[in-house]
Length: 322
Image (cartoon, rainbow, N blue to C red; front, side, top):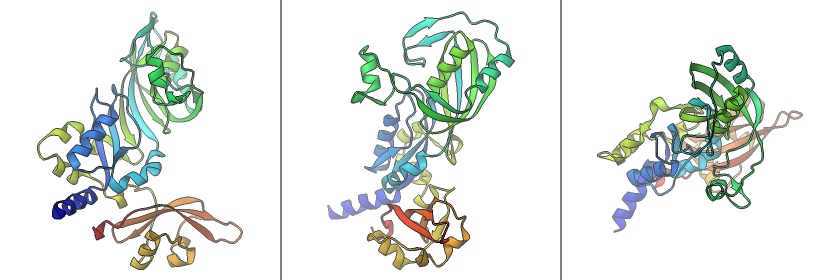
């Protein structure tokens, strides 16, 4: 029995990292998490941003110690392709909802549609859908909306860096969007439909990328139920050190790594001048020993003294010891 427990623990550590999954239509994000948990044998599994059941595409799944990297991975911008159906409005703002209004779709000019789309670029305000997982009066908004209880969520600011019209085949318009995390594409589609005149809902949505990762390198969620799913996960999992490719890293020695894991807050001088090679601005930094990610620290520079303060944000276990 002891031998089995050790093997299972070792397996969980092997699978610590992130897994890129191509979610299929009809699945919830939690369905995918359950599949990964069952396929990998890892108990601690999460993800970095929900996809609605009707949507497909990239879901960044966190395994084991990888769950500690969630706030850094969620901060990355997202890239989507979606098809808007003009002339039909639904209560959920997507194809799964009840139709609440229909309108004729006039022969809109391509230039007019593109001009309206430009209105929604940059920092904009949008109202999240009533059918969302946001809390409203202490409960999930969708739970209240399903009971017919009015839900009025506050507007929030989001960043739309790119909104391009990929194709127009009225009554459908396909868009490509690059945006900040927390952006609701269903709300964007409904708002664009209202500005165009006939209203709209988001007919389909596919997440193409999240941060540095693209759906092109993702494992289909169907593969998680095929033969030898555990081996498939092990082959595809991205190690902790490689999970934040855009974040600078500094190599530290074994002694400092051990002390940081024991609660030590390192000083600038302990990094042997490595910080001097980096831009003097506030940022996050990976502390690495060999191929092992030890911790994520925040660098806060003092412009007067030229010195930096370090603040450990996350500490990762030493998986080599298990």
